[in-house]
Length: 316
Image (cartoon, rainbow, N blue to C red; front, side, top):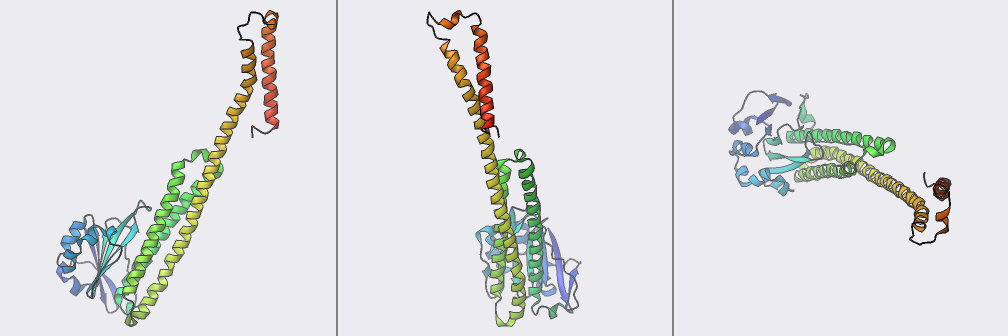
């Protein structure tokens, strides 16, 4: 488990390198990032906060808590985030917002990282410094989503190229998974949008109106992300339909080949059946060259049928 500390001093945000006792966080810090491997470690670490014991389920099973837990002293909210290596799968990170400090709880090795610059005066941008951190968090989440969408785009370009050049190298599983996973990514972004809207609404009062407006303006970025994902979903559906049509054409071609073979062998089978009957008197059986004439008939019939089918376009 790793922790990163931030403190506001004279309007500047500073990264605190020294280790600070957890019981002094509220007094000495403004923001803490906790990167964990086991959520139980985080719960033990934050046991000094009364809110943690009563809300363990929020941290252990965030999927069961789509809405934040709030009272006059704190807000606890969980957010979906794409996994670093599997962008179509998700995990959760949580925010604990107190009156004097924000604590962000993040799975280890996730891409979220609040890289805070040191502006000359952050208070000239946000009255409540907590909103500055939330603003940076939203910016980071949007950037991660853009990278994920770009990855999805590259994957779709590869599928599109194979559809055009070598559709036989595509599998139905790949095409279907592409559509399903784009939908999963869209769900992650939509849930993030809803979560940030809910979080912003909890602070929606006259005192913080300017700060709220800045956050709401940034939230329009999620609308653009949703629009981009809608296009990817439409493309994924188009690729699926194209792939189905290609497979149908392949199947139709195979059926045509089988039909041609069957059509060729029907007259041959008929002739063989006639001369295979067990009648005592069949005049052609006495022909000296009957065997060769029969084979010649076979070749003529086959050649004639092949020329006929070729002209009718059955081999196209």
